[in-house]
Length: 52
Image (cartoon, rainbow, N blue to C red; front, side):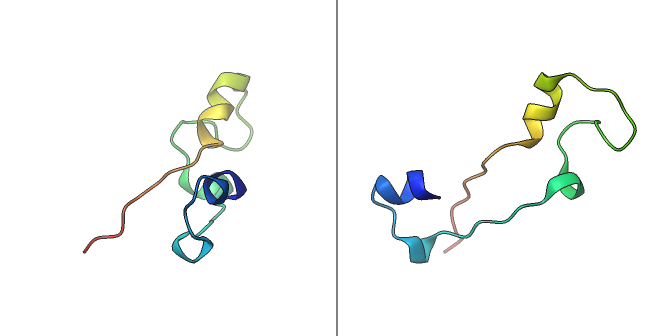
C-alpha cells in the first residue's frame, strides 16, 4: 500500500486484505509440496476499480 500511496493514490481509496490460504489461485494447499514459483502466485496484489 505504501508504494501505491507514494504514486499519488489517496490512502482513503485503498483497502488491504490478506487472505492467506483462503483464496489461492494455485493448488498448493496444506501438506502439498510446491515450488517457490507456485507459492509466489498466491503472494500477489490485486487492484480492482470500484463499480460506479
